[in-house]
Image (tube, rainbow, N blue to C red):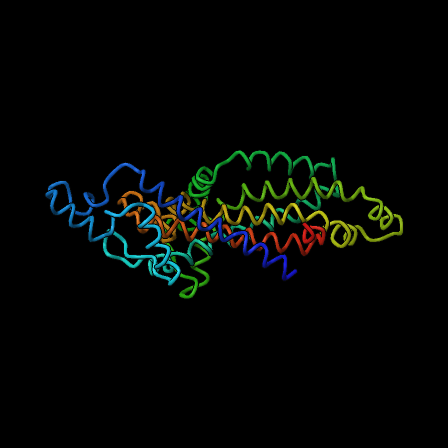
Length: 314
């Protein structure tokens, strides 16, 4: 297993370099002049040239990337073009909100998907199986922003049991933190729960037909033990893979939900930075999200290798 982890670590380094360089190239192609957005349209050409040299924007893309990478390796992601804010400090302040939202959404999705997927597979063709199939089909087709709108209308505006916007840090008041996080987390979790439930149900239906499972049933093993102890582990490989990839998608996909609920996370910071053409902040944010994707994918690969030893030989 240590060799497998080391091999995967070596493989992800080129991915991070490619993503970070591609981000700088794509940002460079975005229409608009960040120097003009700082100085205003009334600035003289001499002032623009001086500011561009001061910010290092007069260098080539490759030159700027090499400088940025050298600083980033020492933990310095630069200073934002707007407001002279330390990029690393701004990201570290907003990151806990986005991570908490993604983790809470993943936990909700797992709590919904695991029992419903297992029971639907065990009672294949029954009323519960048909009902969960219909509900999951509806949830998969709903984007998070529409789910969030529905929750806000019924639970926040009409019933007034949960707040519409705002955020309370977990360290300050865990109860209030959960009240503010539950709606956006549910909006992110439900589509994922529907996909995970259907995936687990399909894999478990196949596993329950395996000879060793049928033998366990014939020997009189209790249904709960058959499903949980015999069928869940081999059926969970696809679920672990997809859930891990979904967790990375939740980190990046929280942008719209954070904006709708006015949450002070990375998503809101990303939107503000794009609007202000703050290319230094956008570069740092995209790199952090890319690292999150890579780390989560690495964790998924290790988990799958643990569940299925054949993966380590590949």
